[in-house]
Amino acid sequence: NYVTDQWAFTSEWSASGVALESVVIADSVTAIETYAFSSCRALKDVKIGNGVREIAEGAFGGCIRIENIWLGNSVSNIDSSLLTESRELLGITVAEGNPNYKSVDGNLLSKDGKTFIRYAVAKADATLVIPKGVTKIDRKAVQSGRNLTTVILPEGVISIGERAFYECGGITKLVLPSSLETVAKYSFINLAPEELDGSLVHKVYYTGTEEEYKALRRNNLKYENGLPYMAVYDYVIEE
Image 1 (cartoon, one colour):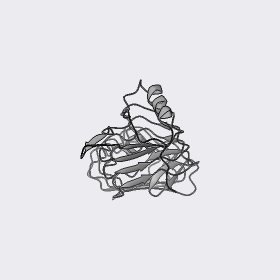
Image 2: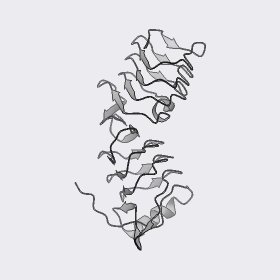
Image 3: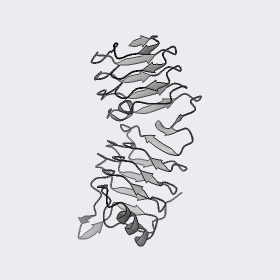
Image 4: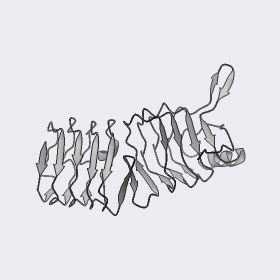
């Protein structure tokens, strides 16, 4: 374990590459700077104290085995590598007093519940139902969710960020709402319909009409987002 009460990690100080399994950042620390814990490949548990406001980009770059993350009540800016580079992430916990983020079922959302930021990708769950109230799926939000076979996005979701569902090759059913307007590049892979026993089997289910789906694809043709040319239309999401 590693516990620190330094005021801030600077570029002159780094645990980069150290064989740490657990890091606890004391409440007296206010910032974690770039590369502070980069390439700590054995790191599994990270607890960010209540005084930390900023986790700089690259602070946890290359930490590919992080399983659990605890965020204190002051964090307002999070290094994306802390959230997206680990393929072993089991859960993210956020202090109730944090005004910027919250945890729902171990996943990270904005405090207002409108942005789905990161899914705990190593969970055994085969189904992900995005909570109602979400309007935006963030960049790389579900990337590498290798156990997922079904993903349901509720009505109200407007945009899906770049690589949001990249490397989720196990998805066999994706439900998209008619409210969806933007699907960024590389969002999906392997969603094209497949032949099975002489029948065409679809993977995408759309709550709107065929015309609306075609318009969605047409309006996003500039992105290589993986949306197939056909879907099941007028799909009703079960409550």
